Length: 176
Image 1 (cartoon, helix red, strand yellow):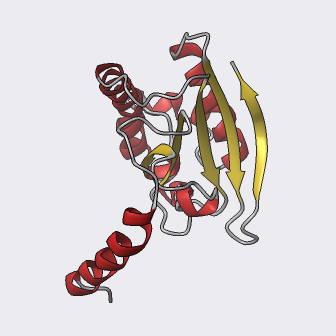
Image 2 (cartoon, helix red, strand yellow):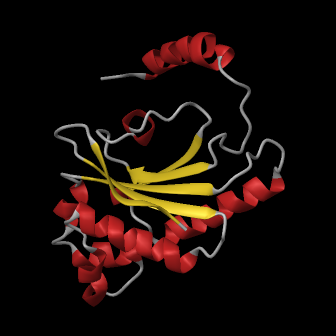
Image 3 (cartoon, rainbow, N blue to C red):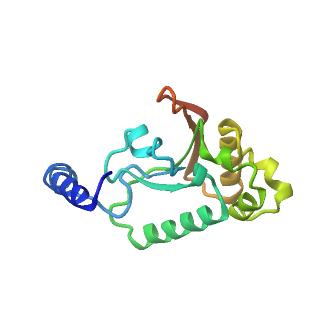
């Protein structure tokens, strides 16, 4: 088990290595990127996608899903970015939705009331969420973003990470 003393020691390594020798960071990601992924410890988006410190905002939730709560979080982060225009890179904003195989969300499929509450929908609408299929769910979530985010400088893509092989497949390439 990793304890707090070990985490503090690792932080010292981080400060003396990566943090002090890395680029100056701003509150806005240097890569104009946000990644939404799952809380599964096997699927850390920064490691899986090789995202450098400060390059992207990363949101993690159960299943890496676009829920009403995720949309509210995205809106709040947008307002933070607007309040801090210094350091904002030019160019389009990239939203990457990262789902994965062998997701624990599949284990929740029998708990329809719990899932319906999570998605803020009725249990009868759950089938449309493609809970047990990462390829289907990434299509569902990209579709939600396309409906909810209407900005000309905003790209969304959908990826599926295979936990058995470590590979990422582009299911939906970046599109407006």
